[in-house]
Amino acid sequence: MIETGDYLEDSGSGAVPTGWDAYISTAKWTGVTPIGGVWDVELDSFGIKAGLGVHGPDFTSQQMQDIEDNYDDGDLSTGKFRKIAADRYYFVLEDNP
Image 1 (spheres, rainbow, N blue to C red):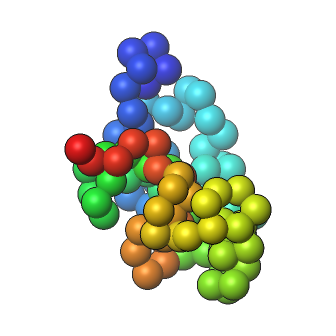
Image 2 (image 1 turned 180 degrees about the horizontal axis):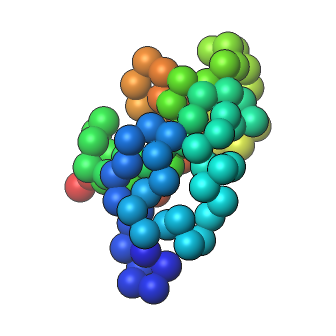
């Protein structure tokens, strides 16, 4: 939470994380993202400690790689922007130790 510095709680894909409805637009969070799919938060899952990303984007694998090439290290399996599962692309806030 903003007040405590803790990560967002894990939420279902497209669901507003607990306590965040006061800080974000529920309609924008639960609607389709600019690349398709829905927003999602992961906490202690998919091999990461915390991440924020898109589940089920409409972009092709090449389009997602283009994003990676422009903003991270060029490898979707490492760095801050990652493909953490078949249809999940996330900004990794923290890796598991």
